[in-house]
Image (cartoon, rainbow, N blue to C red; front, side, top):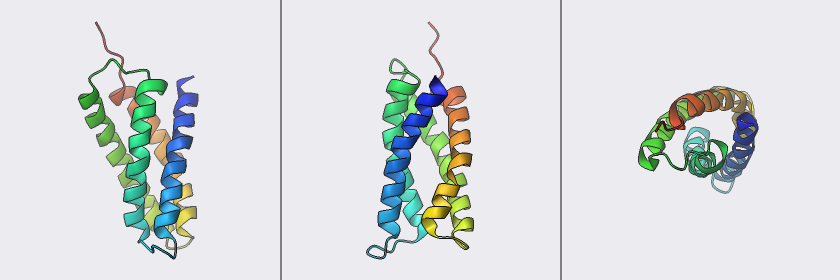
Length: 124
């Protein structure tokens, strides 16, 4: 069940991420793909933290600040992975296609670390 919830949250935060990325890299705004990826990924990350904490992993009773710092560390590592993939692939394909191609790797990385490191059940 948790992987399905994580995937659903991933769809929501990826929609936020991809929509903002497309807007930022559009002809109207023209931001470089790597910079746009940082901004859009950060926005999706905030949405994802709230949804994963309260719904996917039901870890609302844990220490919020500590969870957020661990979540931030995991997502910064996933952002680095995503940005490296996007920057490499955007040389030979449209930026949004490169962004979408990065998703399977960042999904797997994110679920594993969120489950094992960020939203670990609290022991009494």
